[in-house]
Length: 285
Length: 272
Image (spheres, each protein chain N blue to C red):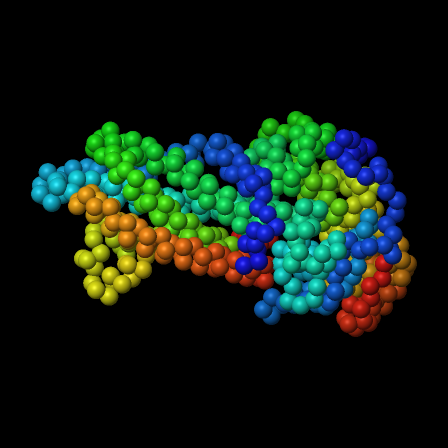
């Protein structure tokens, strides 16, 4: 499938690999989120280069969703700072919310509205120009033409995911935050979604941050992987480097090593020293 | 109140988008439309017959024709105005759509304005059949109140928005577990706002509470107009002043609750 920007798009038709030294799309500095007795995110720092795809990995309760929610401004940090596209969040969220978008299993689109009505409402919220053309373009790209006049609530899980992706792409965001974008999808649809995300990133030079439990997905899509465990960064590198460090062939094996407390090379060691040391690393792929 | 700052400009397009979203929803669901008309019609029929019965047997009510039906209609403006506001808000919670909205460029003040417009639209759908029925069955024409009706309406709708904003903030912060407040809070005003009787029948200490509520002035004003034929401008101006204070307080509470919801991470879930 080829992603085309056609008349609606702006900028060059394709983008090369991300420049790690270039301006950051996201800068997270010593971020902490404390919920009563639970520390969901514990002093993490990272910087994500524009145009990159970064995977946020971790088991349940590792802090992935909370981290993404703080980047989006939906959750206020207990301490630390988040800067998105050069603007501190949430203080200057108005300056960036129109340039980013997200998809998450924690939110739905209105069920009784048709796909076209939903996309129209969100298109207007994002002030999308030539909205009808944009919806038609997304319908072509995401194979939604036959679904456009059906209520969202009548769609299958895979169809709803495609619609949610259309909503996430309606404003051609520079920054796309995805929380489990292929959760509960069959392998074919999941593969189809991943292919589309890759194509979109290439076409727009967009930055994508995705949280996922699917290691193959992360291996395939991401230039860089951040592995969280109990709210702290355990690993932060390219998938290849992390796998090499653990002498493993797949990220899934690395994930299990990290989750079960086995250090690099399979020994029972902390992989990256103290949390403070882990947090202080701000390496780029 | 930085979130309410309008210096960066309100977007009519975004407000329009939200109104369109609720309009699509209303058109897609006949039970929602029917529900808007059902209770107001039941109310006016019940109270209308009661008024007719009392008027035949009590000299005072024969003279003060329409006070009960008038009170029912004005109460419904107050109650339905708040429900119209709050239910549109609840639709976002039920649809788990709040995260999408909060992540979009929609500002809280634009969201609230869209909810206010929707409360007027929903109110019109519910109250117009009620007014027509009151005229057809009981020969009570609410528009005979003349220009004072505008003052009554504005004051009641301002109160309904203030309560709606505050209640929405509570639901935003506490999730759908707090949904019951949406349906019940306004009823706390029913005995205190002296909808069906004058404030002087209350115990003196409770009269102070009653006179701190903007709707009390409206219902007293309506009775003064229907019974004595006098339009009490002073009552309306006091009500307006109290409403202004109430709206400011409810906006401040909404923003504080929104901030608290962000602190506690309730915006993503919105569940129980």
